[in-house]
Image (tube, rainbow, N blue to C red; front, side, top):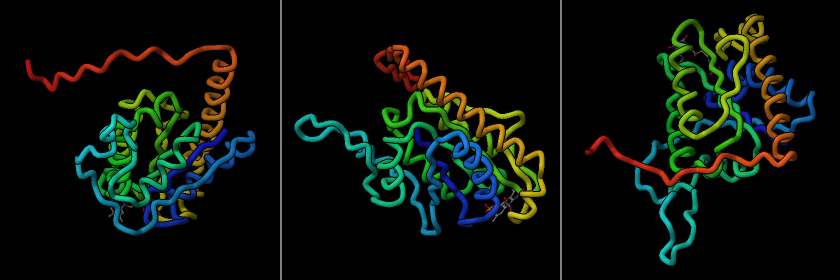
Length: 214
Ligand SMILES: Cc1cc2nc3c(=O)[nH]c(=O)nc-3n(C[C@H](O)[C@H](O)[C@H](O)COP(=O)(O)O)c2cc1C
């Protein structure tokens, strides 16, 4: 089993990374394979709303589920297909997730339910002082629109600090990260046990989209 931990910070090994590493350690010690996927510092475009990623081919071929902007998003989607769970980490920027992660998640999730549904996920946020719950709510929205079981901890998944060292001093925050990791392990194992026992995913209805027009 594999979990991808996305680092949505421009700092490769900053505060968000420090929190992700604490989660990762719990996953690894339970034998779960992991990969930290860093967005990098190159600009990440927002979604062009072109819907090319979900369009069928000229002869009815399946949609590619890949973005026309061939960047870090497609790199991630290639890996995400085979992953069993996800953690998305972000620094808090103006009481929101980072602009790069917001653009990244818009493009990665749009119409990509096939890649994400029924796979457990969690968001974590790192802030100096405030805005963490707003950012935490924001990141969770992607999971709850994608039929992903959301993994929680004993508090909202946040750490406080402006440097990795300060984050490590947030003992409660670090404990929240460790508990999150163990809860993720437990849920992954429950899902695997269910699958082995023949529990099928729920039957999906044909989608209804009313766009509030009657
Ligand atoms: C553009 C920008 C906006 C920020 N906005 C906030 C904020 O609203 N609230 C806060 O507590 N910290 C804010 N910070 C501080 C970072 O969230 C905090 O230092 C975080 O732990 C850095 O994580 P990183 O090292 O992974 O980037 C901001 C930092 C930047 C660069």
